[in-house]
Image 1 (cartoon, rainbow, N blue to C red):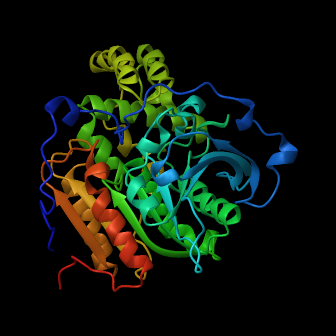
Image 2 (cartoon, rainbow, N blue to C red):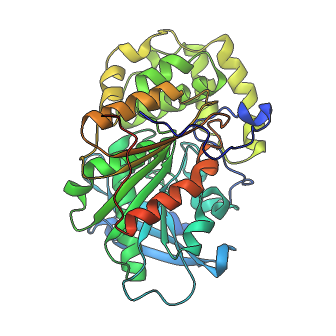
Length: 398
């Protein structure tokens, strides 16, 4: 397999940033805004077809090339197939669309937290969080950026739950189409947790949203093997944060018994970490105390990911291969200490064996926090080629 290693010659970031420790946290934003009634919906408002809009409002955020930003609250489907509200934004390029309409790129965001106030649509520097947005606006693409369930809205966020994320992503595309009159052509682009969301979107797109035409899936350092991810990283600050948020969320979403795997005295620390967002340097500083506490006391069962129900939940939320007609772009940082390069290479091999055409770029000096930023130009060019109908390249051998 050819990896195109170091193709873009990315400069090595500082060690402090290279050790940026939370899954997917590469955001440059400051603290989040206070929530508003916009995110609240009555049962009567929530009832309806997935991908339909409950409400929308224009945001006066500066966007590249004069694009407009619309915050949306829309209907999606929960894990029990119930109607739920999900929030997000749609970014629309300025000027009249071309005759064939504007394709849509669905941006699936990395970890921002697990409580409602951590929604990206509440962040002051929302636009800067969407990697490649400048190139997307320049090329005239509509961007649909979901918050995922439970971020913005009041229910518990199903953190690292692939089907939940994917439904929200696909329904955000439906909303963007209704809002802009865009055609049914779209690509999903995600980082870390969002990479998992992008892959699951590709897996369920045909069954969940058959009217949409998925041209490709692009993922930077995707979470593809949750058990390996947790096993490899549990002795790091990033791994402890990731594990704490996963245990906290899954204990509430699935009723998994957190008290059987976490020391009783560590439960308040897990709760404290779950209540903090990951959207600024101040957020990271606030997490340092609880993170250090977990170094001293955390798990009562060190290999909890091999015990039930945790093992089955991790298997269920580890993405399988995609239908082989959907081309895939993968980006991986060689200096990634959270999603290890070997995990992404192993997933690529699975895709190749299943018949997928996979483009892989490995940037040797890129870490987890910046791999989406550093690979965005290549990713958007790959998306542009897919929309143009060019043959999908592949780095699969044989």
